[in-house]
Image 1: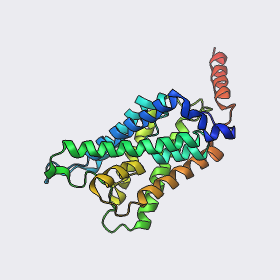
Image 2: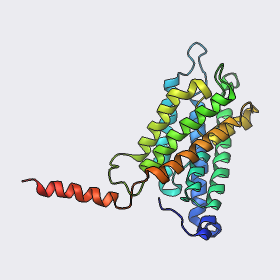
Image 3: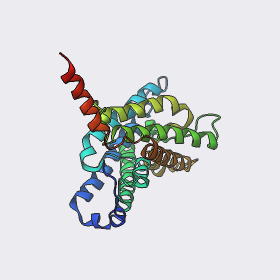
Image 4: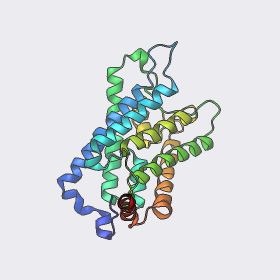
Length: 258
């Protein structure tokens, strides 16, 4: 991912006339729609004696995130999350225009995913359609902190595996991102439902009309995403020579062997 240096490019008005931009917007809409459909669908209770487990939901979320990033990453970057887009925006990896289009598309996609889930699920089983809600005894301040921290983990991982100057990344970036989401859900579902994604909470909120504590699911993830992006970009980002130096070191070790 390359940083935008020119201010006119950063505003991104010229991108509005490009077909590639609108393909990326559609990719974000579809990616977030499928994400919301699967994530919220994994929360549906079919047997009241055996409700979905934290492990089941966590792995459903992690797998669909990894799958969508793999599927549309080459088109849009695979943000599928306003918190990720905001992190990319403040560090100048996406333009203002593109960021706004992405966030609108993500919210519309989440709304569509929730609407589809409601349409295909029997009314008796719909419940709150997987809406994220605060755990018993968890106050808004605690929930806000949890969403900040969990989204921080996600966005820090994204920036780490997408750092173009790192030569030590040999595995799958989408898998690493999916695993970050999985571990965060395993820890945070009892606290907040582990949204880590404003759009994921926005979709079912619109469909169900449940807006209780909704600000937590916007403010927390966006702050966590921005904080992680800035810290990685200005503290942890690999130097430009890093990948080259690592390759040369590896080459030197190989050629020095008898």
